[in-house]
Amino acid sequence: MGKSRSATVTCAYLMQHHCITPDEALAQIRQARPLCEPNEGFWKQLELYHSMATPKEVDEIPAYQRWLYQREIELSRACGQAPEAEKIRFEDEHVREQGGAEFELRCRKCRRRLATSQYLITHQPRPNTTAIATPTTTPTSPSCSHYFLDPLSWMKPELEQGKLDGRLECPKCKANVGKYAWQGMQCSCGDWVVPGISLAKGRIDEVKSRPLGSGTAGVGVGMGIRLPPSNEGGRRTGVGGQGNL
Image (cartoon, rainbow, N blue to C red):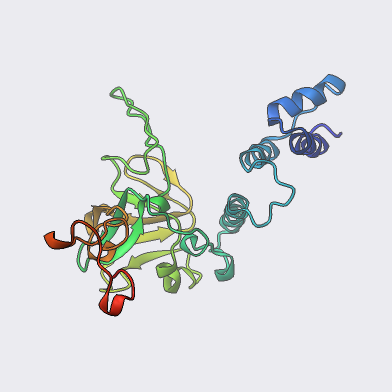
């Protein structure tokens, strides 16, 4: 009695109060009570708490919210049901999109952007038993026929229907671009991803993201305006001397 749950709470307190790791906290506790051993689920929560820098309040932290969402998915999966519509976490509504995404995923038919690389879920292809396999931590590899990703807001009309599985259509041209299965889906590389929300590589183009300030939309944002040769010595004021254009 008291070797798992109470030890976990004490570890969390020591981590928050003394800014130490879960291992260091447990080592301190075991000096007084050697049998203490948080179970696997509690230990993962301690590691998550440490990765969040042990805040006093966790409710509004994205990493904790994602953990709650994953718990909801696990409970729904155990019951053989899709998660309730109001509990689905559409990642692009919670995370501000970063300009550092490596690439975009676009519908091959109409070129509509469906996702960026920041929403891809990393999975581990299973090693090939007949050849020397090189482990990878990239979101997708040549052996994968799908891109797995978080739920995104354009998927709402389909995912909120409460079905266990189905197909995903491009919101612009209605082309079939992928599929989903709340119970999980096996990638062609052999790994099992839960939940399985995927875009088929054969129906998607991977386009390298443009850096901020590029293209016509980026004029004046990091690139500036090219002046005629007569003005290269300095910017002239606008009409009536109202300042730079």
